[in-house]
Image (cartoon, rainbow, N blue to C red; front, side):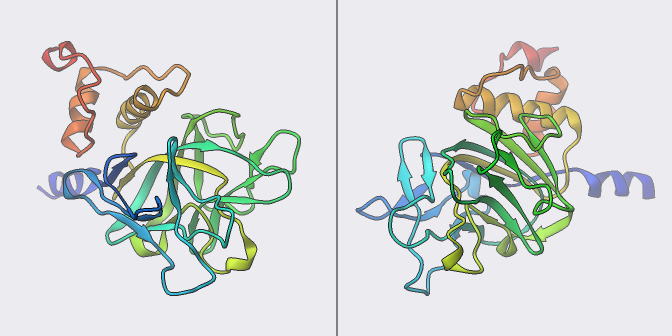
Length: 241
């Protein structure tokens, strides 16, 4: 019985699944006031709203953009719930002179370093985090829309996890340069089969090139049971095997 309970507790579940442009709450000028998750999951809201030094991110055709021309745009944070693994669909638009922070947690961040010839994530800033790009344990930054997958050493509070930039100091202007088109967060790290299904789903939905075939019908069903809405992108024949 103890073993069964341990297995049950270890099962991953989706905390939040945000898909652009679905769920975006914006004002008349396109500034993003919030990003509602599917099926009542945890939404994303601007992390900084009480300071004149910050503005809101904006909705563009390719997703939520934090690279605004005026004051730095506030990153988005989860309203609640702990997050252990997060998948992000991003389309970088890197600056030749500035850093670009995609994700921030206390003590570490996933930061793009565009100053090098081959843009990459800064491994020092990402210390303690496991970062995969398009399913590979790599810090290389492809010059195309891609999937960034981050695992935290310990689950972090949703309010401490910021997507789209650094929240500590507006003067740093390290907001993500480019768009974020999708976010899927888990409370417990999913197994590799579920990860493959999530990557395949995000690649199909957002037009990301590469070999992202799912591992089979059983994994597809398991992923759906853990709360990922796959929007019917996989053949029903997979479900009948």
